[in-house]
Length: 440
Image (cartoon, rainbow, N blue to C red):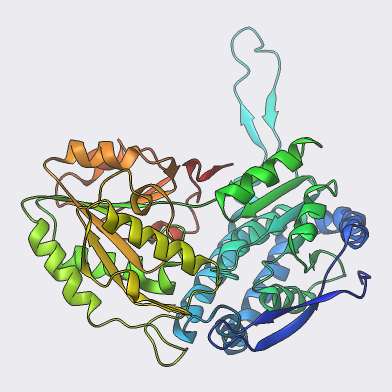
């Protein structure tokens, strides 16, 4: 058992501010103990082999499924999102966990390579081995789904894991560690450490063999710089400003239904959610009208009341409001909602049209239930504007005939054609971005 000092912090229900739980702040010494403990048991976890680890991970997956109501209620309390959204998130998490458990052996199996003519008397093999201890720093917006990728694949590969959840959702992280301990053959294979920024910094400096981080680009750069001092390799999944491209031959109704969900679900707090749309001018009016009509049916509220919840992180409300105001001040048109849609702790849906490309609403991640829709006269223009962003996480294309051609020209990590964020639900494909959206 990891020992921690006496300092604590609280997690809060974003709707009312009431305390959900109180958790320890792990200091640098506590983090070192956690990492050292994980390192001690690492050889034993590796020695179980792929089949042994698979049995443990599938047992954990079944436990999560059997107690899904328990964890989804906790997710809802700490993030403010509807329980139904939390259940969707949990289902995706166990999908990734199960896939990792079943496929790690095949992916990591030793492979034989041709030695070539000159070295024909030799044999060549490539062996993939566990690294040791992996540090994972998770986000608050999807507190079980997003970190589960790093946790599940690391564990399945034979690594032990020390996980620091967001300070907004520490309870979910502790729940994951507790449920894993109920099926684990011994302690310290998967450990949760809670705390604030200094705890995350300590994990970066702890000597873990690799670190996976999900969060803002600003924080990711600090994480990367900190890890660089010890040559600790990092995987960074950062912010996005994901575009939706709607071609003249798109199914407009399907595009509207998917885009409004992508932009507004989880209160817009989705790194791969739709933030800007480039729609061909020939179908722009129909698309915009459809988006406005769809937005009329959506309202925020407490779990069980609203279609989506509040802003989980209170300071994000000021950013959302400033982006809306900047877009309007620069000549953009609010066709649904506006700056007064920010009603703390909620934000009503906002649709902005014909917004200048130099506005913050187009350039920076808003992370709220807002969407910018700009008209283009060609798909080449849509591609150029999509690629002009410093972000490059995901994208969505709506076209009956041009989807693959457009997708191959986008400078981002993932593209969904005639769907939105579907790649996140497919465990067998990589998840990540380029440019300021991360690497690794």
